[in-house]
Image (cartoon, rainbow, N blue to C red; front, side, top):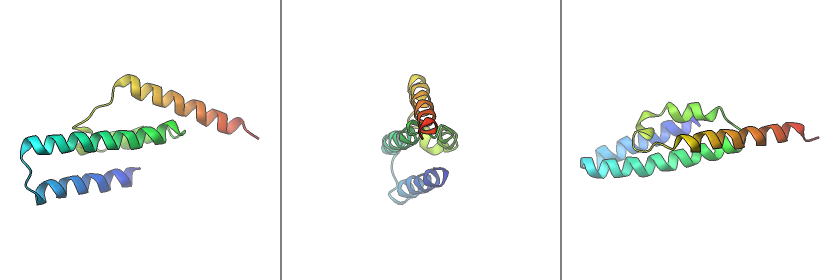
Length: 91
């Protein structure tokens, strides 16, 4: 996940520089990219990989435009913990 976040960060920065986006356009693109980044990380967390939340937080360019609700973070962690526990209990 950290590598994916790095790729997305570099892609976002390069795109903004190459196309000389104005501040409002860049902010809109950062919001969309941040939302996509959160949804990707949330899917991994809910699949049973709660440690991925740290990878999410280490990408400041991607998290600047979008901040998930704290309740969304907590619920995702809970769902992931339950799924991870259920996977370990299966024979």
